[in-house]
Length: 261
Image (cartoon, rainbow, N blue to C red; front, side, top):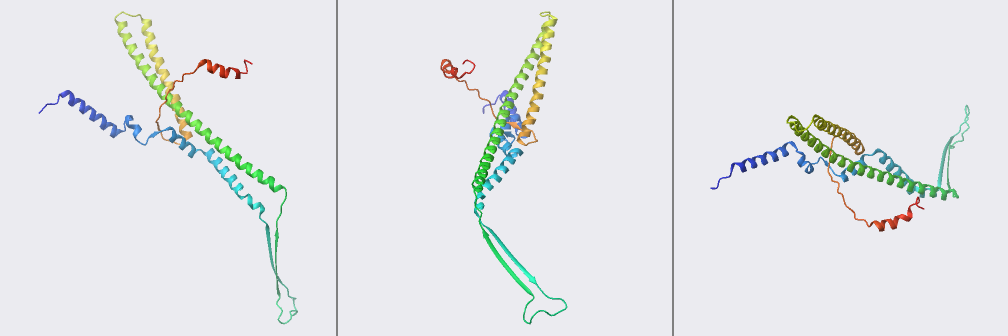
């Protein structure tokens, strides 16, 4: 039977421990496969669902829609029903004839229909209010979608910038360590050594500022979504290079420049 080299056993053991740790502790490598990841579409749905301003716009639109649907009630006639009971009897004397009841009853009904030129104006006003409410709702919804989309990709860009700043800090640290050794060997002067140490501190400051700004922007984004817990964004920014015909663009848009006219 063939023997497995010891190096292969170590590699298999390391791979097993890595996969086990990811399954047990929820390693970020597998974060895209669980329920903690939020895509752009999911963020938009949450923002639309939880935004109080948009809910108010929707209620206003529904109210205006019900008023528009009930315009036919303007043509309903008014019905008036009347009824009464009268009791009559003289005190101290017996004034009621035999067989005559002291109660008398009355009833009446009237039907009226009022038509005037103001009804047409009222119909137009109600319909216009409904259409205005529809436009207001769609504008608010489009604004939320635009805001969420912009902030979503801005946060993704900030995450990538943090990764690059972290790499810059690691590179500056390695450069500082190398310069320390070179300084001890007399190959560089003290000014170069201090400059490399300053680069490390500058990289730390830039990374700290970017992380603080990212946390604030992330909290504002969560408020837009109506969430309190931390989430992980799932998405990527794809850069598409567009090849323009420079002269064709100039010929097309140059005449529209008002400052050149």
